[in-house]
Image 1 (cartoon, rainbow, N blue to C red):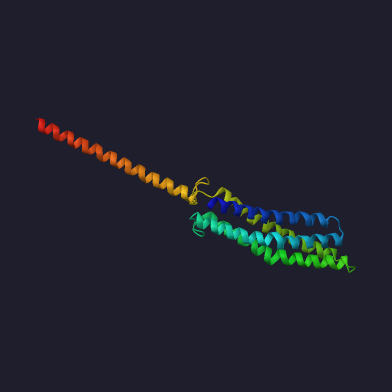
Image 2: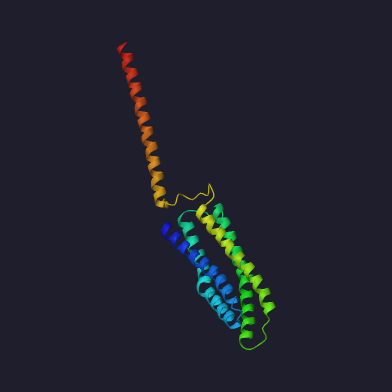
Length: 205
């Protein structure tokens, strides 16, 4: 169960990151055309893809990430790499909600106005675009950092090795306990044998 949830969590991260990274590419590609109609069309697609992929990706990341941590017995706020990843992911969400999304709507409004025959304020569009790109890069790098933490995991993170599920870990613990018990029994048996041998020698004397 743990590995299945972890896989779904990683797939959700891939969906989320892939969409926001390609959004930067397609906007830059449209802006090179200098055609407000193409810019407006591209921005509409970026905003729509955020509704279809970015926001659902966020929900799936949180859902499967929390579920995997619970099943894997990893305390969310007491496991350093999970806590740090949550902080980075939260910063990305704040950047997107407070800066990227509003700037996208303002850029789309400018491009639509020009595409419908209105005045084209190219300087204003470029100024907003620079801000959108800066915050967009920030909104990408923070979850990339969170992804790096998920993969690398700082030392002493408390997570068991990737090939060990919680059940596997329990089996290993049980085996270790059984081995220690067996060693104690053998030690007791040797001590008893030495005591018996000593008693026999005393009688012989």
